[in-house]
Image (tube, rainbow, N blue to C red; front, side):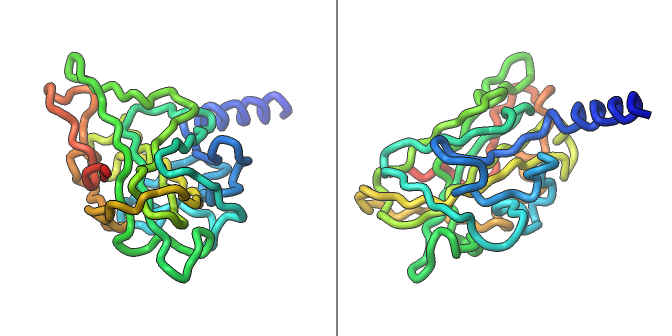
Length: 228
């Protein structure tokens, strides 16, 4: 019986191994300023782009206990646990917290999200290769031109290894609570989107055969990247 139980445990571990979470920012502990996700134990993905889970994949309503201080123009570094195992597109979004709310109280609803990063693959022999594949740490630059204040920072990795049919894309998502200081406030983010609402399951960047793309350039889902 012990041998059978051990074998079953190994089988479950092997199944879960390819999946991953983004549990903390550099210099913080797991789920302190990052809102705990529903997959914090299973590591499983979101697959329905029309569900509320596509926003922050939260385990429960409400915010995290801490808010991380970040300098405009500086970097914010996320940890992937154990790493970004699957091939696919990495992006990052931010949302300014409305007046009268805090990063801990804001649920991120509405057309408030703007994209601040999108990685792009190289193409060789009809296959895509992404620079984020296999990484356990990923850094992003916070735009210098943002106004000071509280924001939500959303990391998203969409695994595309099984995305040749609608609904096959796997989303690994987390949202961090941050306070941005030192920003000039000289530019207003545009191309704001909502989650859900930003994506369709049939978007070219989400329903795709990454192993036989015919040499076509990859088209990321969502808006263009906001720049100062």
